[in-house]
Length: 174
Image 1 (cartoon, rainbow, N blue to C red):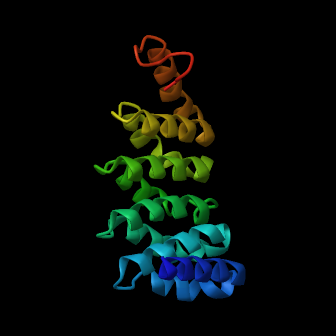
Image 2: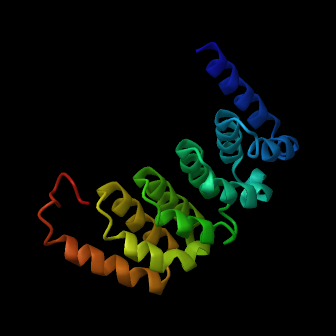
């Protein structure tokens, strides 16, 4: 629709503005309309590390009443929170939610956080038993990118067990 196109263009413009737009985008994460919150969250994610001051607000959106906002907040945390571990506790909580897309995005965000996501390894280890194979796949990727000795142990256990999994084939490794 026309209004969706306008929102998308505004998002692109704010992303092009960069750091000066971050305070207004943070305010947008608290707006009453879900689509405004979603656009603000997505744009903060597009800004990446420039928006790192928004991490606490993005973490708060993981509890948003809109599933789409929650999913995009997890994704944005992986982009804006890469240089620190402040997003990790909220992402661990997101790994335990019912929404499989939210769990997948949280695992991907932890992969982007990399070694700073070390505190997430126990939760990622639990996610290796998730019913959704895409969530499991992103958890393996996150554990790999975290790269610590503590992370390698559950990764190897998972990979060894997957050799005996009826669902694992040459075409689908997870």
